[in-house]
Amino acid sequence: MIKIYNTLTRQLEEFTTLEPNVVRFYNCGPTVNGLMHLGHARSAIAFDAIRRYLEYRGYTVNYVMNFTDIEDRVIEVSKQEKRGVLELAEEYLRYFRRDMRNLNIKPATINPRAMLHINPMIDFAIKLIEKGFAYESHGDVYFDVQKFDHYGKLSNQKLANILLNTEDAENPNKHHPADFALWKAKKLGEPSWPSPWGEGRPGWHLECSVMSMTYLGESIDIHSGGQDLIFPHHENEIAQSESLFGKPFARYWLHNGYINIDQEKMSKSLGNFVNIFDLLKHYSSDAVRLFILQTHYRSPISFNEDAIKQAQTTSNRLFDVVLLTKNFADGSNELNKDALNDTDANLFTKIEKARQYFITAMNEDFNTPNGLAVVFNYSRDVNDYIRNTEEINGALMRESEKLFDEFMSVLGLFEDINQYHSIGTVEKLVNLLIDIRQEFRKDKNWVMSDKIRDVLKEADITLEDTPKRVLWKLT
RNA sequence: GCGGGGUUAGCAGAGCGGUUUAUGCAGUGGCCUGCAAAGCCAUGGACGGGAGUUCGAAUCUCCCACCCCGCUCCA
Image 1 (cartoon, rainbow, N blue to C red):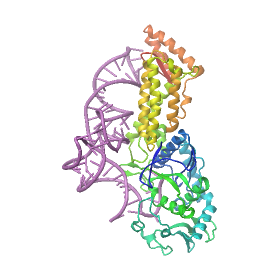
Image 2 (tube, rainbow, N blue to C red):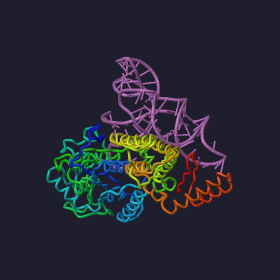
Image 3 (tube, chains in turn yellow, orange):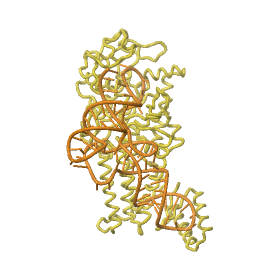
Image 4 (spheres, rainbow, N blue to C red):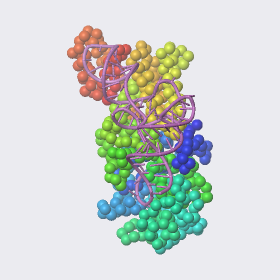
């Protein structure tokens, strides 16, 4: 049974779905007005892992992640850079897709863009006006928060306690200062679309309600995003969708914690962000994913150079043991569980237990740090087995490989490992050289044995002498 | 003002009433060892401070200190 911490109820809840075995999952994506930074990456990776885990557990996940490409902040940047909004959005969108791919984020079922949903947004606003939840005022359309009884339920705020800035407080077009724009009248030099209220453009919050409805339906299972979206963004989405449809919008609200740098939130507005493209010049995507997943998704992460370096070391070490397992996995024989010797039977038990412990960890609100602890503990056992066992059981190693494949599919690690996997001709050749070298070593001919090792090293093949056998890997 | 989160060893970070206080990186010692590299084993070291509840608290309660975040720019 999977348990999820729900921001809405502020407690752990048993996970169930509206439709059997299908998860309707909407993840609030980024505004494409700048480069992807580590904070975006955290959100993307955290929910990617959650999505992957749900799939591992047998769910079909309809995973929608939007791109906000028309909004105040995009317009602002387009003015600064003196470029068209469309051109700007297209470019940053490309960068985001590139970085997501580099981080091995599994492609969403669909990545809807706000700019391509203007008409449905207008329709949505019209219906809200018809139902009396919104009103037009001088070309703007506002949601009337006083009409929605549950306003503030997600952020646990009473309407009266919400602090408002002076601009909103003094906006004469609004009935209540907390009313938010569904539609904004055109301002000079800004992109606009025709609407019943004249030229204008949609407000930020509307797109998610509309695109969520379009691709997942009026009620969904999971809606996620960064903690900073709880208020006002998600609060407003709830107000829009629930007042129009009269039913719960999302059943589980998940929010990831921030990344702190020097004890301060990493954010676009503070300008203290680490951009992903640059980070990936120095660290592998696996290291970045490990760095993120070593912390529970709701906790804050402290970022510093040391921490990401450590993740890189860990990633390399884990990669090596997974690769070793693959190299010894042999599919030619079925594993006969009843005929295993003690050593093999022992490892087989560990494989089964590791799988079970991993699931237990992940079932508890997707506890990836504990899941990783299981992976590390198991990898120690395999390392021991491969290096210290007289006769390696290829069929058993195939079970081990299967286990690692399961772990890695959830964590999204080492997707390209098979290209390092020793197979066929290369394997035979290297094994031949290892055999020859072993003869030299037996004769204490260190010159020749070292030469073989050095030459192989130049060919990106690393040898490792262990008590029972010589191990090798492509690097 | 209102609403949240946090303070765990050198660093990162689980645990949230009870086996020796995970796990990773870094230490230290050992095994292995022609060298190299890796691995395995062992080991030191922490629960912000104070009081309370309890047979028992990092975990619950209260007080104090400090930090972070949200309250219409943010993942």
